[in-house]
Length: 80
Ligand SMILES: [Zn+2]
Image 1 (cartoon, rainbow, N blue to C red):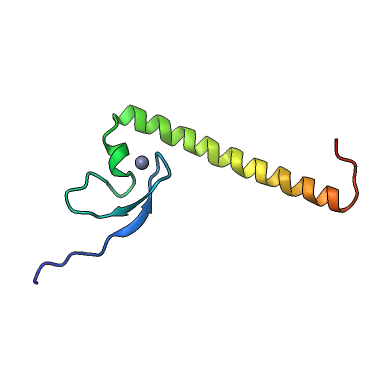
Image 2: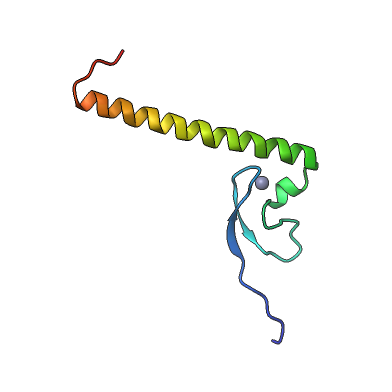
C-alpha cells in the first residue's frame, strides 16, 4: 500500500449537529457538513446553521438560569 489514507475523524455537522466520520471515500460529507446536509441546498443548510447558533445560545442561557435556580433553592431563597 503506497496510498496514504488518513483515518476518518469524527466530526460534528454544523447544520444538524450530527456526528459523522470524515473523510469517507465516496461520501459527500465535507469538513463542516455531513452527507445528509450536503444534499440540501446551500440556503437550507445556512438556515440550519443559523438556527443551531441560536439554539446553542439559548441552551447556554437556560443552563445558566437553571444553575442560578439551583443555587437559590439550596440557599433557601424564594423561587416562584
Ligand atoms: Zn448534517
